[in-house]
Length: 412
Ligand code: KDG
Ligand code: MG
Image 1 (cartoon, rainbow, N blue to C red):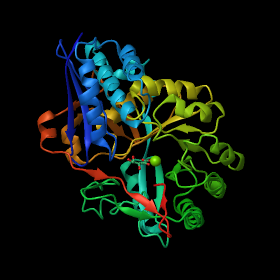
Image 2: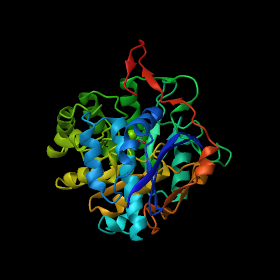
Image 3: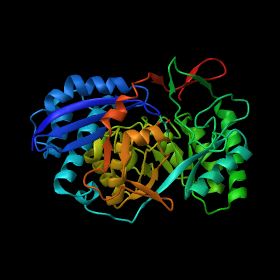
Image 4: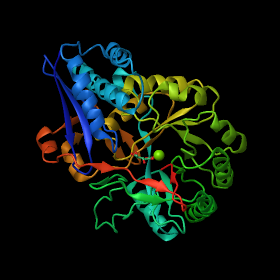
């Protein structure tokens, strides 16, 4: 089965998405997600100019060989652009293999290890009351685990606070939590770690008082703390029994997490900006994390992320795959097939796309009683409606960035 055609499709229904579409000589179509939020066109160029010419004429069945060929023959290994491009090819080939076999991809990966995937959503608020409304709304929708982000007094605008965090505030529409603003230049946000460290434990105390001890709660530190500050936060959140504290430090310094671990038993999740197993080498071997946050889309596809998660499983480290709305429905489906099949699944982030995105990407995955399931259609189970995609041209969008009170640029 030969790859005859490869197209890179950029569309911006509710936000920008990059999709690779492969067609074989037998007429099978496979799609893969290559969306890199805020840097989408870099992956488009990498795919169109360098990868597509290598794909035409290749045997679509040879997934592992194609992965190794794209990774090693480039000479310039790793990095988000390369690995998102490789991921898209990998996903599209798994999609094709499933369609050819007449099986959903999870069956090709070993079959289901569970009936459904526990998913968490994002609650947020500028005040505790607003946050409680947002939590209640998520519970009503069926979420069984919830991420909590709260505004910090004195800071105007910070990560993770949706401007309209409830359906009600958003006039019955799904709120768009996308931090990348379309058009113009990056938004500037402000940051002060000491205020944040003082405030966040009070928020979790209030949430536990309101919603009780059972509900799994998560929190994202979004790379802003030093190791000792992260240790301090982990320790101060221990009474509130978090499911995880995410991205407490900029974790490319893997060794830094030793210090955090020495001081706190709050579980740690890291890796949404990691691309390869090498980024996890030390933190997995030394058991410095509890959850792997990588997305299929940013970590070389199903083939490579499965290797990362198999490695992590030796140390009882589980998956917590990245799933904000900047992962397209194709990337989300790939995550669900992988999550359903592996033994060490932990939790899946799931935010729900907007109506326009759903019309571009016809999905067969389901979300019922708080659990996701990839569905049983052959392949990944997502179809790209090319005509609908064509209605929404690319719009430049940048993620925000942070400055401290004295004007210093800080991690966002
Ligand atoms: O593109 C950046 C977003 O994907 C990121 O800010 C979302 O941190 C995130 C999360 O945990 O979903
Ligand atoms: Mg995150």
